[in-house]
Image 1 (spheres, rainbow, N blue to C red):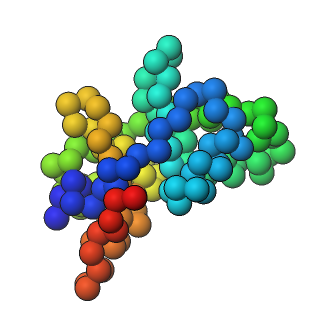
Image 2 (cartoon, one colour; image 1 turned 90 degrees about the vertical axis):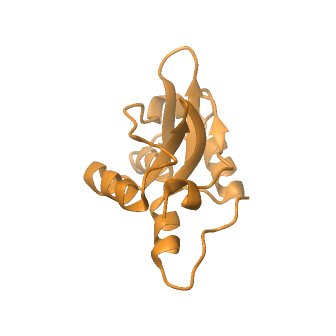
Length: 131
């Protein structure tokens, strides 16, 4: 099975100026653990995860003042839709992360998570439908 078969094509996209509270609300409403952050002025495409928000809150930072851009991971490993799920899982395991932004022709077309891969590898389960 390939990444294109498991990925979610409904990607939450936010800007670097969103506060962490705004990002958390959007992620919660969409029931996703990561958002793609577009910063056309600086780093291009990055990712903000629930762990990034948790680390900020855990260190006592104010979620109404901290911005997504400050907590975005910009050194991102991207997947291609044609990768196998094993390749995606290997990249996640080696990088220590749970989400991969999927690029096709340099454009984000989806996001694949560890949960997506597990759903596909679990007998009798199908990939979750796109939201």
